[in-house]
Length: 280
Length: 340
Image (cartoon, rainbow over all chains, first blue to last red; front, side, top):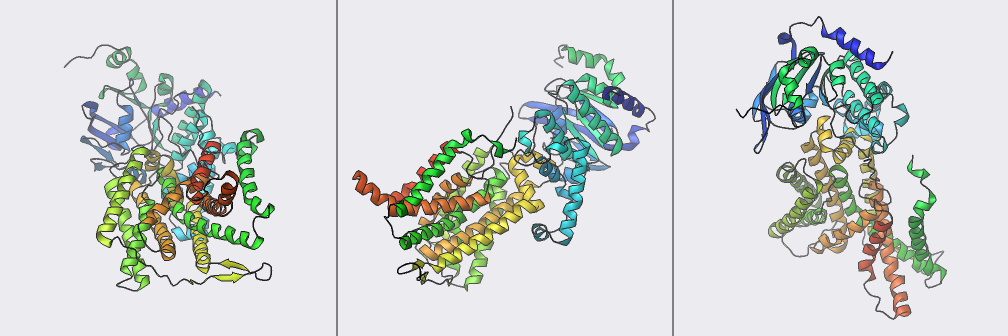
C-alpha cells in the first residue's frame, strides 16, 4: 500500500468519534501576543491541542507559525497571554522546563549536533532521563552501566523505527538533508515526548521523502500516542495527516477547524491568494 | 565515507610537514651536532615545558568544546588562580589556600555565567568571544587591585633538586627535573579525567551538544546556564592546576598571563575541540621550541650569519601558521563539514 493512501485512511479514522475538545485540551495557548521591536509577530492568538491529535499550523510566510512554536517551547517570551499545559498555566515557558514537561521539537532549518554521530544525537535526546551520578557514569560502574545500556536500547529502537540503521556511526553533518531531518525527528522521539512540535518536517523534500516522513509522523502518533503540532506548507500533507488546522496570517488567527472546513473557508482562501488586508 | 579513506594525494601537505618536522627532530643527532645524552636532555626539557602549555590549552579546549568560543581570558584565569593561592597561603596553610582559590574560580564561573553568558544567549560566537576579551581585562585589573602586582611565591613542596638518571648509558647521565615529572603526572591524570567526563557522562554529551547548537540543546532539555557554570568552573579548576604548577616553577607574576598566549599555537596544532589534541599539541610545541632554540639557532647563525637568538619566541607561531595552511582543524579537531 502506498504510504499516501495509508496516511489518508489513518487521518480519516482519527477524525471521527472525538470527545468534546474543550474538556481534553492537553495544551492551550490563550491570547498570545509577541512582538520584536515594532514588528508584531503574533497578536492575541488562541488555540488548543487535544491529546493524541495531529494539529497543523498553516499560513503564508511570515505569518508567525515558527514564532508560535518558539513560544510554546520557551525560546521566545510572549508579551501577553498564557500557555496552559495539562491544566497548569504559564506566562512563559523556559526551554529546558518545556522539555522536562514532555514537549519536544524539531527545527525548520536543521539544528542537529553536527559533530556528533547519529547515535550520539539520539542519545542526547535521552539525556534528561539519565539519573546516575557523574562519577558512576565516567567509570561505568554498576547502575550507570545498566542505565546506559537501557537508554542505548531505546535509542536503537528509534534508529530502527526511522530506518537509519546504516548511518548509526556517521557524523550527522555528513548525511544528506532528508536523513538529517529524520535524525532531528529521532532525537525528539528519543525524549518520549507527550507533545511533539514539528517545524516544517517535509520542507525541501522530494515526494518519496515526504511520504516517508508522513509515515513516520503518523506512526509516532499512532504507536506512541504522541500528540503532534506541526507547521507545514505542503497542503497535500496537511490535508492528509492532520485532524485539525489553525491558520495564521500576519500574526493573527484567521481560521481553525478540520481540514475540510479550512479548505472551504473564505478568509483562508483570501489569505493564500493574497487579497489586500484591511487597514483597520 | 569515513575520513580514513581520504586519498593520499589530499594529505600530502600534512605528510610533507610531518616529514619536515621529523627531519628537523632527527637532524642534530644525525649530523652529530649533539651528543645523545645532551640531545635527550633537550628533548625531555621540551616535553616538560610542553606539558605546562598543555595544561593551559586544556582550559581553552574545554570552553571551546562547550560553547564554540575561544576564551581569551584563560591565561588571566591561570594568573588569578595562582595569585589567589599565593596570597592566601601567606595567611593560611597551603591546602586551605588552594581550596580558597578554587572557591574563587567557581565564584568567577558563576559571575561569568550570570553577567556575561546569560545575557548573550543565542548570540553568535564572535560576540561571546569579544566578551571574553572584556573578562580578560576585568580579571587582570581585579587581580592587581585586590591581590597585588608583585612577584609572589607558591611553594607546593615539590622536589626542587634535579635527578640524574641513566648514568650507565650516557656520559654524565641525564638531568631530569623532578618537579617537572610531578607536573607531567598531574597533567596526565587531569587529561584522563576530562576525557572520561566528555566521552562517557551524560553531562559531557550535553556539553558537546551545547557547543554544536544552543537552541537544539535547550529544546532537548539541557539548561544552558547550568552547563556554562559547570564548564567555566572546570576550566577554572584546570587554570588553578596550571597556575600552581607554573607558579611554583616561575613564581607568580603577571607574565604568567603572557605565557598563556603560547596556548594559542598549541590548540591550533592539536585542534580546538580535542582534549588529547591539547596534550599532543603542547608536547610538539614544547619540544619544537627547545630543539629550535638549542640546535636551529646556532645553525642559523653559522649558516646565514644572522643573530639566531630568540627562535624560541617565534617558533611556535610559525609552526601554528604552517598547520593552519595545511590542516586548519588541527591534528585531532573535528572537521567541519556542512552540506549546502
